[in-house]
Image (cartoon, rainbow, N blue to C red; front, top):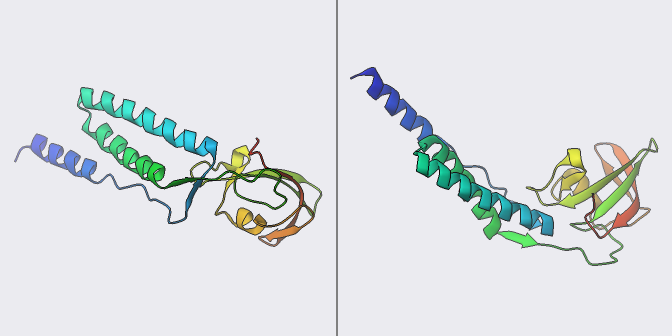
Length: 160
């Protein structure tokens, strides 16, 4: 057996070994922005796949196809959820300003899992902080990881 044949076989096994992206078992709640993000990802991946197919880039095709399957599944089970205007309790899609014991304030937007980015002020609806906040009002306290946070402001717009 030539080394070239062995390398090709190894390459095919590597491509076949591209595992699926894990899909969360939680409800796939999304904001309007989150739904648009899913649609944008699907459009971008379709373009990338077409280019990879034209080039015959099997590895790229495998990876992009896997990502397309993920985002297609996320789109199929996405549940758009918009908070009720004027709601006085924390719900999905809302902005929440909290004040810690030390007087520092933080603001979080509660969004879907794929949209969450804590470095940009958004947390997943299944995160411990969001779970602790749901159903609470301004003035209520939520405890997470041994620290207490008072809710000082709610916004029914998922603002940054």
